[in-house]
Length: 130
Image (cartoon, rainbow, N blue to C red; front, top):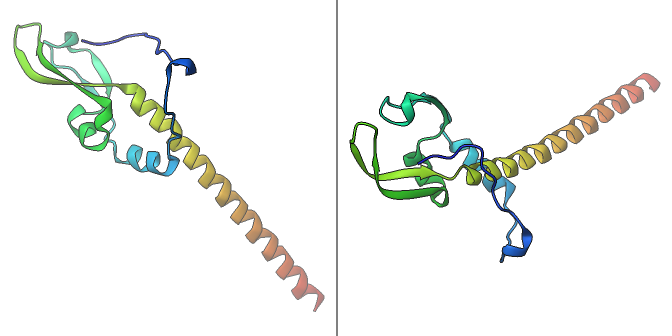
């Protein structure tokens, strides 16, 4: 099973108990991911190239993003039991929260640099006056 070019329903009217993601936690999760470029084996999806993660690793980090299918039958009739699938929406939205955290950290660092620059300029002016 695979998906290509789909839309994900996201209307607020069908959601309950919304909770804002913790951007710090999201960044910690995203930082743990082993992101890969790979090629499928020839008997699965024609051996095409892909980009993603190992579902087995993600299951340890973000189990909500994993679905298990009883079996996957490959093109050569090989059967893989307990085939894992990744819901990339979980990774994508967690990544957006991580970007928000990085943006906040960047703003704080920029402000700290600006404050330090002002302090250095003030100190230089005071030394010149005396």
